[in-house]
Image (cartoon, rainbow, N blue to C red; front, side, top):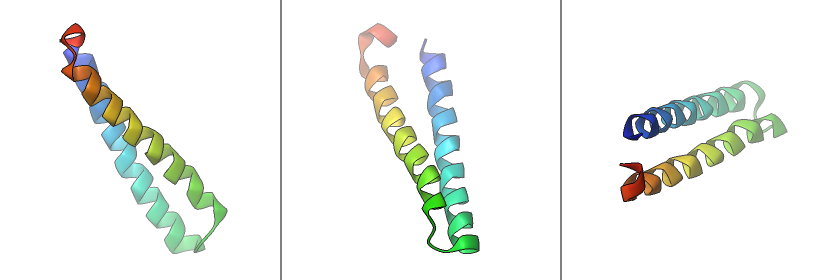
Length: 63
């Protein structure tokens, strides 16, 4: 189970990285646009997912 938690954690970090990349790319191309809120919302969700996974990993149930 710890392997699954680590894989989801790595996937969330990769998605978080690409959301930052795409937010920067959208800001560079289109300036301040409402389209930039999509990667920001996804990255906020991924950040909370990373925090939840690290808390789950501390529990003895998921070891």
